[in-house]
View 1: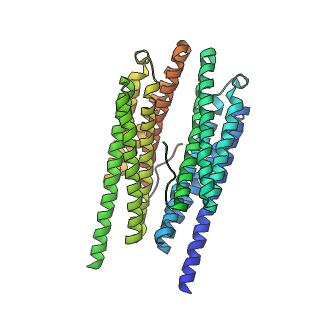
View 2: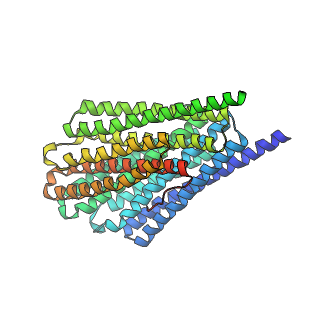
View 3: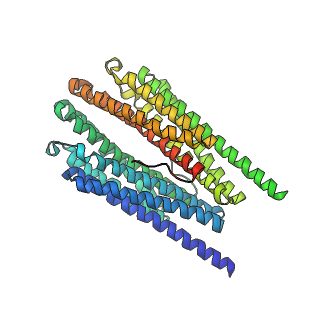
Length: 222
Length: 222
């Protein structure tokens, strides 16, 4: 009976831990899409909202940290249960970083000019949608402990990388042809790079989910 | 006696954990300096060495993870001891990221041309030395649990940011004046950004060290 009670308490804690991470993931997905919307429309109020929402993600991460420490201290989980708590800590850390990249994008909104003259203003939101979908899917894979969905996320990263390479080339050509807009083009290069990094981090989480579900990491071709 | 034995075993484990992190820090410091050396001299063999050494850092991080899990499982540390183990996990994660940035710099070596025509080729190594010093100092602060040195690392980040801003402006002017070299200038922008991020991450570790030593985070002006 007491054993059952402990197991139940542990399960409830883990469910809460996973709930916090799902909440972080949801916020970071929305932050990315809003950051791009702000970038494309030049909406600095929306950009400020994204920067502010990053603080919420940070607060959630520190709640995950505290809860994880409490679970370990109070429940003394063993083996798989302990690995699950450690994985939650690591995943929360990565999702927090994903939030940082969106914040970085939002911070560039005020430094961008001549929006109608850049092709990447149509490409970047599509690229960001792909990356946001990766974040969404990897957190679904985490919730469902689904290694197949995790592999799909890893595969999707190639599309994000292809977008990045195409936008990079486009911006460099644009710079050569329009030296007056180089400063904005450089900002957009960083935006593209930030989205590409979000894809990389979603991939990292996918590898952790795959490991947690199967006991081995997917083959790495890095 | 048995209590003493447990305490001693815990202390030995923690010392090993700290030793692994110091080793990661040393490798990542060297990787950054070698990456810049490879960039400036165009030495692709040295660049390949940096990329390879990043795998060693990754291996050490997974050793930290495994040891931390083992310590928690076997020693069931409480309160401060548990926080120390969790901090080690987090710090190892950040140092691993610092290694990734150096790897990213090394991977750009082959894409850089016309080295003698860029002023940042003298500025970037100095900027990298500053960042490497931050990494070095923050790990010393971690080993010595020294909150004052941690604050110095946080203050040093301003110098790295100033370098970044100056190099960014320099490269954008260079692009405007020399459209033919825009592609290389864009690579150097990313190098500068990577070094700036290393400074940010050293700052993050410094905040954790300060927290571990004093129980509160230094004031954040982010």
